[in-house]
Image 1: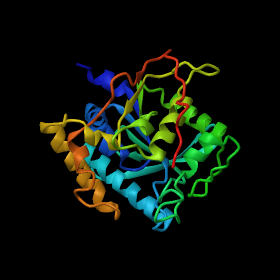
Image 2: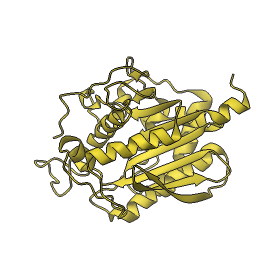
Image 3: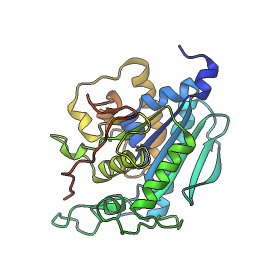
Image 4: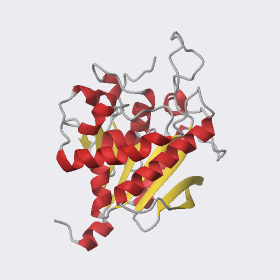
Length: 285
């Protein structure tokens, strides 16, 4: 068991594509970190907006939900301090939960929303800016909160700088091979985010993993047996119940399968020094 002093110096950074991916797919691991008193960072790469709602107001509704969820997780009032931080020359919005070691980081990159071009709803963007940066290096992504733009190089550099500043004992990401999941293929933002994080988590100038990185299954976790029970099943539900009322796209039972599951696939933990090579078969649509 860690001493109090050891817990206070342990740091974890969890990177997700959207507000709610952490609560659904990485809990109860993140909640356990918070309860243990770790320095907990959660970084949301996209704004999590959808093409059928006003982008910035909806993104901020989801952020309000995340703040309520982490206040519940920590057992404190929902009071936060806004702090703009600079990484790799880019200003980034962060919120720190007062009286705790919890910090949420919001990058506001335009997310994928809507169907592919031949779907019944072609009005949305089925690719999103993470995928566009990943597959087209010169592409310029402009955060919806008006902060300076990124290209692939500067965005990966910013994620790398966040990791360096937080100096975590380990980090979490989605699955870099979630597009191969069956029967339920993962969301393009989830996979794009995971690959960009993996690229950022390399030792400078090498393909070697820098900090330990654990991958988590998202939508396809519904195909696995339940593995979250008792106290943590209850806590995961209580935390989720603080989030979803803020998100008008959700109901209480949306993604209900995830409350009793948390999947870290075998062989998807990358230890420091492990060579990481991106998948060559990732396409969307």
